[in-house]
Length: 422
Image 1 (cartoon, helix red, strand yellow):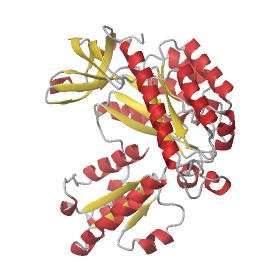
Image 2 (cartoon, one colour; image 1 turned 30 degrees about the vertical axis):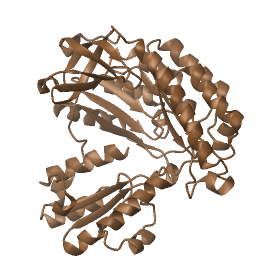
Image 3 (cartoon, one colour; image 1 turned 60 degrees about the horizontal axis):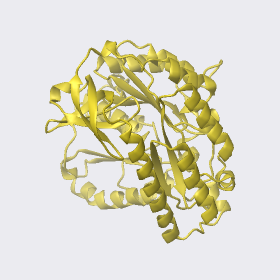
């Protein structure tokens, strides 16, 4: 979500005549987009704010902005701590900076309206729902990004059409809980309905979405993934833990068995699906037995990819108020290493099954005649290719596999329209 926000703001500033510079001391505008999902992330933001302060003294006209989740509903404390910051913007609250820049550049405010589009590229992000209503005990997001608010389908279709006109071939629909899309809108609307409309956009070739919640992954959404040609067969479904007691303390709203039944439902309907998940290691009170239950669920499901992180206290969350962060740091690190080693073995075995197969790859970038792109199942594919391939869909025969990516060679560059879902 932060990357999507940054891309939109960069695009807006480009359209106002500003361009990116490589060195901070060359900049007329500096924007820090803050992530606070973990305390260490917020600490890095504070460190950067402090480090960059002298630039404001050297260049009084420098515009310094802080945006993102660190900026809450009340900014008095931030304004007091960082008086040299000109603008504080909550997530998706771009107007304060745009207004200031329009004033500095002597641009009519009306000319600035509508510039907040996604940055053009082969593949880009489209936020479809902001905020979250889940209030998991470990998470600060609902307090910083607010409650769930869905964007309207016609607005999103129009944005997708605009992106196609600017060369975009693939969009990833984003939400803190993307499967909750539409629940706050009038009528019987869910993510499946939006997928149907985006799938119908002429010139768009792939659709992805992030991140799902097991409780909101409905049968209609699963059917839509299976039936719609452009929707890729990859789902990120965070489990967070494999122990019922830990899941309860996390306030996730499902049991281990319910999660596994959801996985079975997905795989029964979408036989070619690839699955990734998120896991928190060392949550408050997690015992060795409970951690081993997490390892067991990873062994049972055999995810294609696992995003794992150790738990850390996050001031303002329910967990910090209610539980003790009592798992020692060295134990957390040991558990994280054990999980990562297990998943590396599983990912290596899964990816080895792609050897000698032919994959449809959207070429996203080429550096030094080495191309990179992703398959429909979100496998990172490397192969030799020229810069002219960027934006094309190519067929790649896989001749080498590893835990995190596969390699191959282009065997053909067919017309995009010839690709079927399977």
